[in-house]
Every structure is written in structure tokens, then in C-alpha cells.
Image (tube, rainbow, N blue to C red):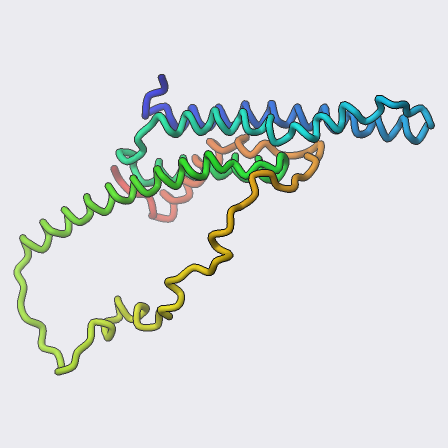
Length: 223
């Protein structure tokens, strides 16, 4: 069982290892593609030439799906609502890294991960908004208030803070039918280049550099 304190590190390491394994799968596939081309160019091809390549191509989505399930299980077993906001965003970012990797090189939309993240995000912000509303209620109850003199016919949209709502087109609130079309589970994929970068390599180093830069620029938040 992975504790909540170790979830981010565990997700990062799991993503790193899984992407290495999946990259190895692509390396083997690339070898067979090149070997088949060599045999065909040398007129040495026979009835079994290309069979391994075709089988590996057909199983790209399935192989990636086994990795998707491992990440999904890890995310589903934790309640992210108690996480700090920056930690929550980091987990979302790590999940998105794997989603992009799976889509690009395996034609796998990683729908299970996306669905889990969507559910966790809804729960997180439901809890987050309730906490903020409690803070706002305490603030309103402890402050002294006085009537603000305004002209007759005053509208809240005249305030600078709410001006953007006045310019909102009501039609924008409705999604087009295309927005709800189901994304196919199997997508097109790219053959991974030899020098492809593991999306989880250097993630911890980049996070540290960002923290240092935020401190230098005065944007760091105290706990």
C-alpha cells in the first residue's frame, strides 16, 4: 500500500519504469521493421517475413493498456481531495505525461486514466470550493459593512470584477454535438524514434528548478 505522502514519487517512478518498458517494445518493433526491409531488399524474404512486425503492431494498444491499468489503479486508490493544490497539479501533470506518451506512440487514448483524473478533479474542487466558502463566510461575518451609494439602475456587471460576464455570449454555454462525440479507443500512432525522450526523466529536477525560480522571483508560497 502506497501512502499519500509517497504517491507523487511512486507515480513518477512508475511512469518512468513503464515508459522504459514500452520504449523497449518499440525498439524491438523497429528492429523487426528494419530486418524485414533488409530481407526484402536482398530478395531473401519468405512467407514468415513481416509476421512478427505485424503481430507487434497489432498489439501496441493492448501492451500499452496493461500499463494504463497500473497507473489507473494507483490513482483510484487514493483520495486526492486532501492534497495541497500544487501537489494535486503535479499528479495531474504526471498523468497527462503518460496520456500523451500512450496516444502518440501506442494509439491508446488512455481513457481509464483520463476518466479517473476527471473524477478526482471534480471531487477535489468540490471540497476546495466548500473550504473556500467557509473562509468567505467567516470573513463576511467578522467584517463591518456599510451601504455603498450607487446610482439608480446600478447593475453588478458595471463593476470591473464582473464586467467579463456582460460580454459572455449565452450561446457559448452550450457545447456543439461534435464536443460529445466519442473519441475512438484506438488511435493512430507514431513509430518511436531512437532518441525519443522518456517523459518522466528529469521531472524531479525540473520541479526543483521551478521552485528555485519561484523563490528568486518572489512567487514562492509559505506553508
